[in-house]
Image 1 (spheres, rainbow, N blue to C red):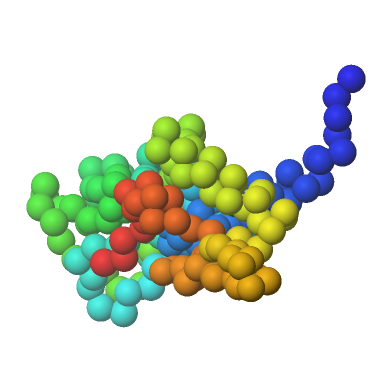
Image 2 (image 1 turned 135 degrees about the vertical axis):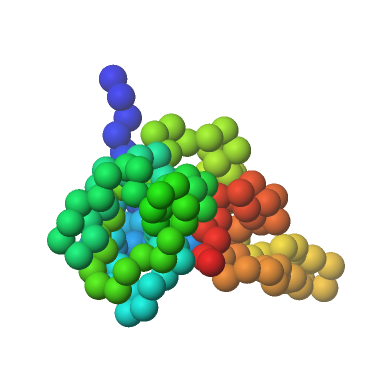
Length: 180
């Protein structure tokens, strides 16, 4: 027999955990679905008014460029290069970088992780422990001193998420999106 009494609480915890990590990593949301570090297919439209040297995709790491459409014309894979880690898409002509033209450029690509890396899992585990402990007590309470009947000291967190310790922040650092 399995105990399902905590399923709702654990589901809520998982959603909060995922949202907090995505926020800390600066993962862009499409406004419809929650931001995630998991692999997914993304579609972005760029409209540079003047030639741009590069296009910066919102999600990383990029695992595959599915298509690039430039003002209604599909480009071949030899017409662009992508830096998978930074998500920078460069237009190529005659094997040399060139500017992107003005107009509408649509990029469909896959980005994110199929399997979460170990240090990301560790950060999630540590944050889950902190989030779960929040249900039993005030997570900002650092110490209670009772000699003259109770004195409370609270943590002042260095980030906007009081449960995000320096250790968790360090584990998430390699996954933070860098915007050029």
